[in-house]
Length: 82
Image (cartoon, rainbow, N blue to C red):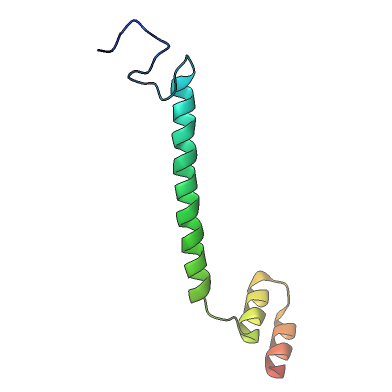
């Protein structure tokens, strides 16, 4: 039977023994949950990269024009060249 007066042993709320056992247990589970989250996130990003289509020269030109890197005259000139 568990001794309720013993604060240094294993018992409810303790992952490891000692006064910092509960804190160590919470940190341990936080690291495990974070690692699982990162694993799922990385796998999702890999599948997204595979399914992403190749960007054409015209797509790059349109993106640069939308960002304001080139003006209308430059955009029209380069578009005709393509």
